[in-house]
Length: 402
Image 1 (cartoon, rainbow, N blue to C red):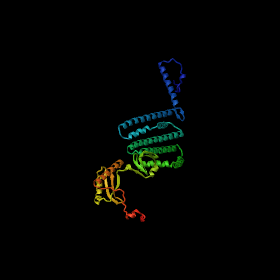
Image 2 (image 1 turned 180 degrees about the horizontal axis):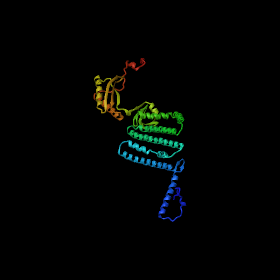
Image 3 (image 1 turned 90 degrees about the vertical axis):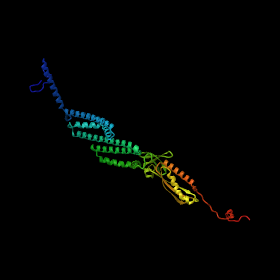
Image 4 (image 1 turned 135 degrees about the vertical axis):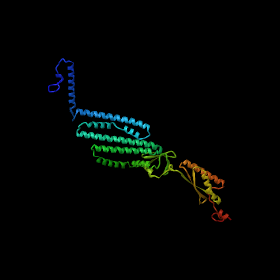
């Protein structure tokens, strides 16, 4: 009901009349208009510097943005996973992994930041919200980069386990160092955006780092030696190596130590730093093995047979599979033998194949010498004695009893 000035008359002041159906309709319309007026007045109410309808609009934007980002992320993950199952590429797998790394706090902060655009916030509140938005983006970027490093590590280790098993442990350690550096940088940038003076902090961390490094110098030396082993690859797991007078098969290359199984069965543990400072012989890297052996013939062997020896040895060596003859020469006239030196190559680095070839060559040479009447010499010394029987019987040269 309206007054003469056009304002609504409160419902309580309406007269109690016996209204017809039409009057009841007018009554209802008036009540609705009265409620609308109250609602508009409520929405225009100022609350913490903003009208109620602005707060409601901000809440609606926050809710809509949050729901949209959640649904969008899940739909994209589901869609990319189906594509990844049908293709062999790695990019879709990486995208699925990174989307899984999207954190709730980033979605919430983005939604809150979008909703705040509808509000007139104080400078301090706007600054806090802006800092929260930047920090959330930084940490989310950290999670994405961390996922990228993890994805690369998993793929690389899986590939290297079949090709170069030595790299697996040290690559994982390298990934840990990369993640540590990544989060340190993100933390420093976040603190800088929050207004913290990081110059003093970095200087303090530098001094602390130097002190810690001096305290654990040997640990860092072994860790960097491990990375050097991965990069330079002087040996890998499964290689047979000798270090000084110790030898064995490499079983594990760790961040600080390398473990070698000796021929007699015990486990040898070397610090990586000490290992690289030593002289290492890696027999697994051999493509062929040079074999040199010597033998001696008796002095009374005829020169015609001596001249035939190199051809006989060559013929026997060439009968053995996987062997390449190099040379055979009468090397020297020694004290009690005529010394020969023979050189040939076993065309593989396998130790068992080398021993099989050496045995076959040795037996073949002995058989050839036996068939041709060539006698091997053995250490002997001939003593020539001058003098008469009396002198021999009396070494001092004295006359015997008369």
